[in-house]
Image 1: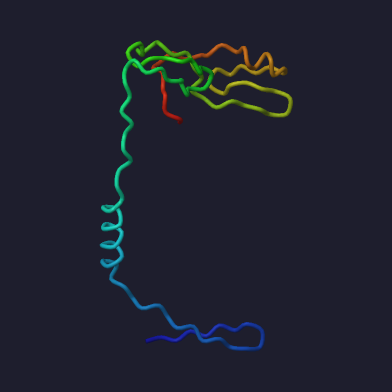
Image 2: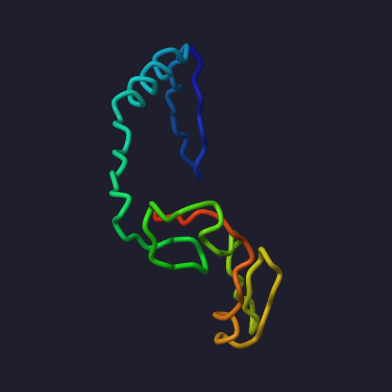
Length: 117
């Protein structure tokens, strides 16, 4: 057993060393914790139920039955707001006025997405 002393100011402070652990107990505890967390339930949606697309730059209302690989026009990259310039990183278009930023056409086509990203 080893002892450790730390000096703080003019006083010595005794610090008890932590017991050595083989690591198997903590691994077993982590594994049991992971098994007890239930997976989030997926929401069942009717194919005719109107949904709002959460893709950046889209925002259209769509029905799942009408969704296909080119139904949505959106920006996959983040919006950029730097100093007085606004734009989209994905299509590298930057403007000075916010009204112009709103009218920048989406650069990518894909599926509508009703889940927040």
